[in-house]
Image (tube, rainbow, N blue to C red; front, side, top):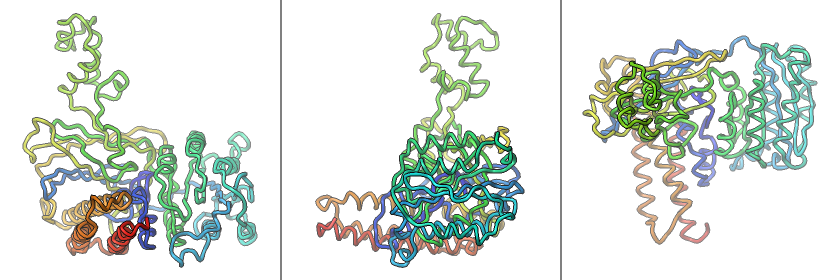
Length: 553
């Protein structure tokens, strides 16, 4: 999810909760996308299309070239449209749902099941509209229907919620059973056609005690093909990278985690409109450049080191994905027997050796004719985002670039950025922009071309994005170090001092009024949370290493 975004990590709640309680969580709980999605950025004028990419070249203090891409939608900051929704809520009632939401004593006062029941009450009393419909089901090792689809303006809310209040934990967990009973609540279109023109979504509230990723993924994919989308909220659990990949590779689906009642309310109430009504599907961002290559990407559903090779070179399999010019040249090189005058030079090359060129040679020749396409990210679904004081929450993708052999001087380099997506009606759209580094923003300058108010706000947003990337990078590196600590090769005192110094620099920079000015009212609370997490992380890292040295694990 981007904007509020591409359907990956929606926040870093689990990381912050674990750190606050004194734990050193797994590195997968902290993602660049999750942190970006908790913050507001000024991304220029509001979007005019269902999806737009607004890009800004940056030159870092060390000379590294970056591309900041803001994905935004005309739906950002708007309430949902008039389309009613059929919502099938499914609650996990297995024994583990009796546990507390998080690690702190305060969070343990309310069980995961109690919070799930509260979420249903919020939906019925505060979120859903009069013409929306809601069904309620439970599951442990089997699925159980409590309420069929009921229209909000035709129900006695108090009576309807009594059955929800009476729910008690019992038994084990089989997620596929929950998915099945959730889907069955909609029936089929052929029965009465009542779902025509209505959004349909399954909301799954579970602590994921048993996942079965393969079977779960197959179910979600099957339902998505029927335009029944899935939202999964992990109750009181850390961010689950495997589950995120399982869910988000399917159209219209989204995964979130909540470790407190407050976080759950944000997901269920505040984010309902943006998380339940997608803006675009089959989103692909890519670049072409004869000077630069994609070195790393931050802010997508995939960690930069988990991404496959982003370069799309020519092959028979990828032939249709290239430009008409490149396809025509490739066909001439491969089909050496034909003699179309339009491809004279290519024909001469293949005719000279009296055979079609091998595919790897064709790829190399086309690479000289046209820079290869490099994928930045591909996501199945884009959701709109919140807007406060002209700033969009989330939607930032940072691309670190590296020079190609023979590249022009840094400020003479350029690239072509392409955005492709399909809208809700299935219509394909393409946006292509040329980005030059002659007007790149110089990190640390807090100035832009005209240095007017809008340019200053853009500069501050880019500075904040780079600082947040640095924050996550430092924390992730030290999480890996803490979990693989070797006292024979690591110096505890020096490592803790270095961590404190590096995060201290980021913290000081984030508090700089040049970063916080004008955006502070839109993002002050989120930045305060980052500062608290940094302070706790430094403290807990030292304690974790101390336990390792004492042999306590």
